[in-house]
Image (cartoon, rainbow, N blue to C red; front, side, top):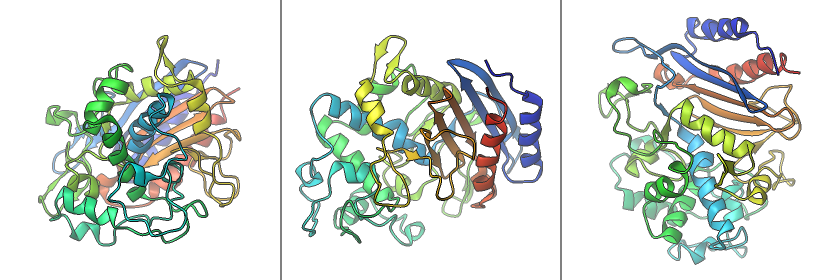
Length: 356
């Protein structure tokens, strides 16, 4: 078992907070099935009045929604024979008007290789749109590249996947996820549109529209238009709940002897599906990339995978070392700075340098 220098890790986090790079954070480290660290640093809110971060703070996960909610829902449906990676998405969303010779398939959405652009330009000026109007815009999107030829990280593709999950299940995304994923994983504080008391939240960015800092309201504009419930963003959770999810992934789909996903599905998800591109992508997951920037740092193994969220969240798995690292921050409380891009790999290096 690793003997972490907790003081050294705490000093690193406190330095980042003192430098104004983020208001606070919750960090979780597990190695070989044992929790090594779960600690809160700094503040969950600074403006308009400071309050301390706690380990039960509820965070806006941002794009971790893609791998905590959307990915396992799709994998479950694959396990149940309700869809396959090869299925064209038009079979589930007949309104989607794809004029390409090669149809966009489920695998293309999961690997960000659909050819759809990353976002809708000027989305911050389109908050007046209704959910149906935003969905209609996305359904009329045409790929910029042939599907399966280039990786372009796309929120739009994951929004479509959320709609497909609703189409296949016949119910709202949150309803399906609560019954099939969150309840079995004992993730009682995970979901869309949370209703906790205000003192539980890691407060995010100032909203010009609301003339207030967002607290318990989704940070992402498209998710807000989608009433807080979408396949790309909108999920809120705590480090405790995410540790349960991480343990399920570590155990190849099993949590407390209950199978949530098949071993085949979890292992397939971390395979490289995009060898044609410089950015290696699994199903949902970002894979270790030795050729360019990688948020997981320099010491992780070749099999490592994970994901990040724009609000300042991340989840990293290193199967070879049997290691899971969860970092939850609300760095956008200070605006959309890029300090988190340097913080993550440096923190991961500091942690991994101490492991066997």
